[in-house]
Image (cartoon, rainbow, N blue to C red; front, side):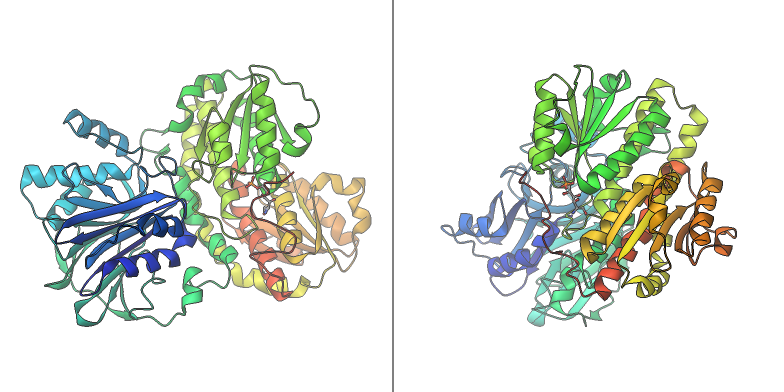
Length: 614
Ligand code: AGP
């Protein structure tokens, strides 16, 4: 996710753009840039770092002009640095473009443009767009809006873009597909653009939310015009903004954590974007292409991580062993680094980290790397320390995760591990074609199924009310759901401060069953699958001791409904994909219990978002 702002009107653009970017830094903050059009031409300033670093960078050189665009970046392609920062500029310096999203087919487009003599300065997918628009203008002699429209007909992926052109002073052209863009209608013909209403609301409350496939022309002379991708004029529907500024940053949600739970259909889709190819029945992970063979031939996979990322690694163990038939050991990075572990040169080590800065995970990587293992990273922050020290890796593309309790990062990590395990299994032939295709289709259907699970929130909230004063909680699961039980327990304890434990369901009789009483909630993941009957027996063991059972079940389940105290139904899916759905009610449960207990959900006591100390 990146932050986009634009302005065209009668005021100086620069101060409006800078303050707008500051409002959007929660969307991405690894680099920033601004372009302003003045009678002297197109001025562009951009640099690595936060908006305040950009301000310092600009300070010596004023940027006069009343038309401008600004961008604060969350890197997806190309690490955070001055060159990869937006805006990106056409070869002749006439066009400047900013972009939020992922251009899936940027590589073939880039090759084609290079073959026609275009030179690229950055590693970004975005730069392809500005050269493509410039190329069309030259070839077709079209104006800026039409050139943008024709260019976007060649683009596959998600985008919110704003373009300006020295040849069209007083004009901004914007387009969106799967990434948000809001237009603000100001006084005296002023027009504003932003990724959300946060930077706009201080100037005007009259906004137009752009729809997918629309192109907007903000013109000082002719005002606002909106067209669809077929070039048909559309009448803009202006809404009056009610929401307060503070709530806007959270997208109208009370906390970043809830916003990020609700972002999961999008973030899971983004982590598959350009990688899961249903039509070709294939998975392409460009970031590990050069190491694919080594992974296919691996004798052992070690996964090192901490916290929630370690739980994702636990899901990875089941995935790689089932689909790629490669033995996996999941290690707490903090233990691994001090244990003098046996590491062989043909070992593959997968390091999982949302922040890419966790000290223990970094140290574990250095140890394994020093003994000759191949290190593959799964990170959410492009250019982070862990991403830089691994041999190769895949970014999760979940967007900034602000809430300290990790939610969308977990499901994005599990999605990436699923893609990796399926791809290796498919290359090795340890999954047959039909099963592989069926799993790809199931995986492709997950974002929509997560949307359905989110509709259980009211029911989860009702259950949270009943158990918000519990002193302990037990989470149980078998197979793929055992790591989900661990993750659910971590969520509850880290934000509501209720002690909670995750356990393999069968292990309950080896001790934890002594804890069962009428007070303690026992949360059981009891979805249809290989071990369903066994889990039902475990629920009966709890009920026989008057325990309280909250069960996550497959839609339509009547058996558990007759035994448990509460059931939350989630859509049916393959066993291996249950973690992506079953974790969502557990995230919501921990969130609502914490809110009802008056806890600081986004910044729980004693915790940090990134543990960069040992
Ligand atoms: C997750 O909810 C926690 N905040 C924490 O366990 C986190 O997962 C852990 O610190 C690892 O962080 P990383 O993924 O950034 O390496």
